[in-house]
Length: 320
Image (cartoon, rainbow, N blue to C red; front, side):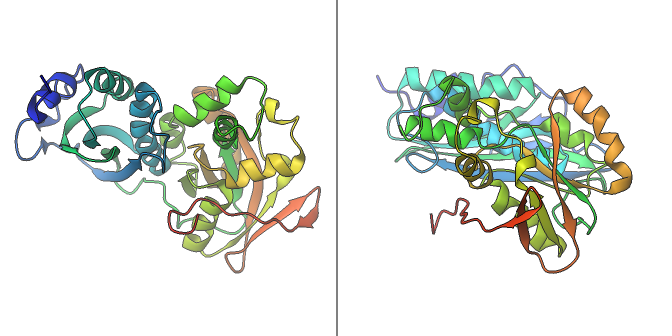
């Protein structure tokens, strides 16, 4: 017998190990009721993942559950916010119990890791899509933003970039990579940099997560802050197993690939030394890739000091 909507919710999403004291009313009423910590701001982000747009329809549901939550957690990380509550709206062609159990395990496992409570949402029948709205909090006036960068600030990126795009290319049989499982995992189960984002609050002047490609996301910082940037291509951190590709291929994956969910941020000269402790505490490498400059919000690329003209296009739902 098929599961009803309410039986589905009760069986797979209402039974959660996380039970936060600041949730006064969670799943089971018309709205959730929450208590905000004092002297904090609420950080909210929503993302929708659609089958055959953001993921292959036959993707492993466990990894889909993980990624659906991870991409929202990454938005909180980019603001320096701490995760607290999440709602989930899922549209399903049919209620397959094995699929739902695996999806819920992927979603809830990551939620438990970040002490994140599912507080509500919706289930409907239709083409497969997942919409997640995540809520976190950040100390009053301490959030990371895109519009506070200044000329002279240094540009940094966490981790390595281009991994997820390489994983997608492997799945599409456009590349044959050494250790392909690593790159596919980076695509399907990204690691949100929550700890890095929180540690950067007193250090970084701006921050964004890399979802649509490093170049395009950096342009958002430049447009918001009203300054330009020079990026040194040889300094961009790519994984050792991508070094066998041509330099042009590496740069295309790293700058325009997207889906890495690493943090791209700027740091004033006088605070650069503080990054060493962030790197040590988080275990995530932080690499300087360039510097902001005065003038129009123009992105300039150099390789070994020489200007480079690149043809790049990050992801855009209506032009890609």
